Image 1 (cartoon, rainbow, N blue to C red):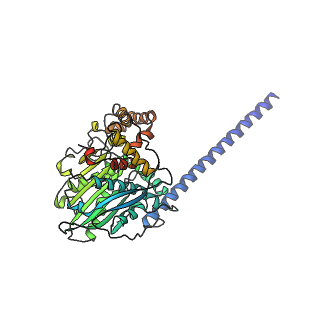
Image 2: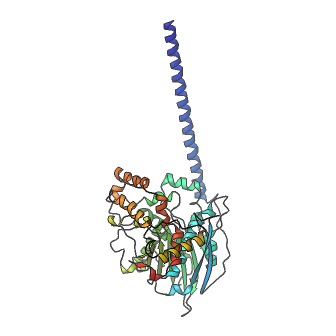
Image 3: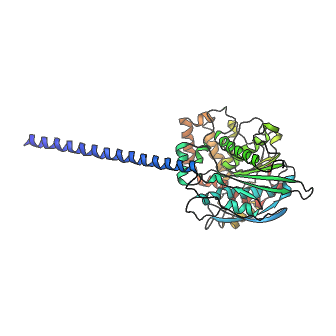
Length: 436
């Protein structure tokens, strides 16, 4: 009896092992099938991108040719707004701005650029199939009297499937709007062709590109931002070759966060060399207004007078503007324009909060200790990581992880919201800002 029981037990064990092995084989086969299916789907999407098929078509918006000075109401989508995520801002415009000294800071132009930067972020919704989101960028530029608008770069950079391809391929791209308008001086009658480039902030898999700093501490410009900027440079040069030869051209670059960093580099490429050596060969005059831009260069001449036409509007409480750390040798080209802090002026802070609530329909979430929180967050990392090469070590990754776990990152980022910047600009004048 004992031997038969032992034999039966061994038989049962063999059956269980065979059953477990069969389950494992089924799971492996299922995983392989899922992998193959996923690869097939991604391959099919790559073919669609290569052939320009199965994507939302750019809208055809008829613009009113508005010239001179005027006001306009711009609508756009905004996360964290009270209802529907659609808000509006009233902006001013004046063609004469583009015949004035580009190194003179213009608060009204800064505010308009901040709103356009928020519009660039909202445009992504239109390019998602099945979405009812309006084409915010086309409508915004139509309100401002622009003659041509192109948002074609959004077509394969806004869908979930395209973001998955970005995760797999690690692409360093960005979406952007290009708009052109003939502007005329009210004083002299001189005409110029204005090209505005508004660069979208971080979106989906583009977050990977934010971490693509470069392979060593010797890299001068942030690599991920540089590759994105170079694509836009090539696009602008191709457009210049096709339209209005002989007319003087002026450029305006703007964007928020990643879009601000890319815009900063775009302007620096136009400023950093003269004549045929310029990366944007058609740029006779250039302006840039960036918002919440991280540090993006170690160029020792980044604060040279030749970049005085680049204004980086920064919220002191915004942790993103503290990265990459200055302690690692990083900065922005041009001049930094600092908004007030929450505890600096009670009247301005109250005005900012009122402006935020009026447009967003909800109370401004930025807390009084926002600056201290952001400085503590960034300080935690820089105390443990000494440079770019160390950042990508095991110790560097651990320090970043600990910082994210140890702080309320969501609260820290409220100072980074586009509408926080817009509200500050609406509540202040140039005299309330600090330039460095």
